[in-house]
Length: 89
Length: 285
Image (cartoon, rainbow over all chains, first blue to last red; front, side, top):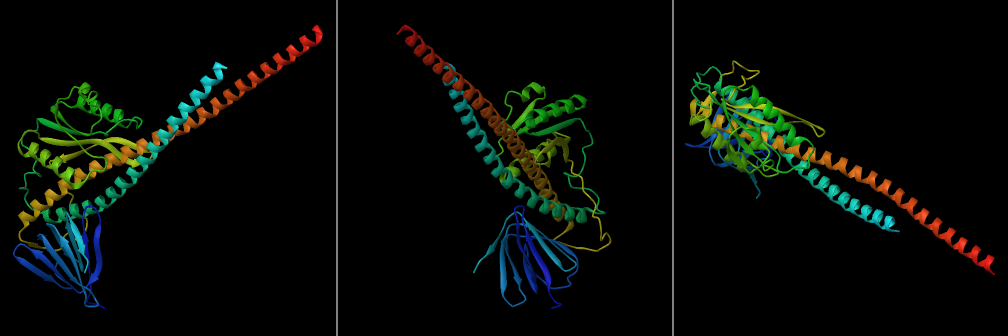
């Protein structure tokens, strides 16, 4: 599938998530933003909340994050934050 | 016979020492694994933070107070990260000696912030005034790093220090640590290596991103230094305790040999006494 990109959530202790996704929803101060494949390079401040990533099979992976920074470049989205935890269903 | 008993007691005491050194070695080994894995994951995270900082700061006029050198550079703050206890070879004393040499060459006014419990009475001998002491655990976590960072940043922004330098044992390998320094403040920004001309969108704005990233990078640097120092401490202790355990092994061998000699000598004496006695009785008959 050509329309996937890489999402990773990294904290000082571990890499919480590293997977291929279709789209991502990032929590920000003014609301949340959606990111799709081939997004322009961007650096943004992530606020405390939940990062949602839509996987290839349609399921959604959710990660609770503290404040941090996200960078998008070359179809790679990296979220760096102090604290993060995968939410299990 | 007193000699035999003395040797046995000696062996028993050496065996006890051996047990202690072996368990200390095991404890140090377990702590070493923990700090080492924490250190390596933090290093990855810190590298990414620093890279992003480089991207944001690139081509921007420096306004962030943590990045700006002070106009007057008259006071330097050494942050000495020592171990929490001894029994780790020359780990602590070599670091202290290094600091003394460093301070001797330094002409600016200087003071010390000590992290770690070791050397409450050794460090004042270095004749550098101690401003503050921090207790740092055996596996430093983000919270401890944050407290220390906040204090050091206060020193710099409050104008009490014009340069903050971390002094600690750099971790080369489990067998080798060497004392070194790292300038914490003012912070240096590494320019990004590649994709220099890529145009980034900054959300919400460049200044606030820069502030967040300098904060993160500063904290990471302190945390990484604490972890590196502790990793070195645990490996130094492990090495020292391995050597001590090996020595006790050798000592026990030597003592056992002595014991056997003494025992044989005692038996020989006893036999010759009996034989001599029997001979004397036969002659008397």
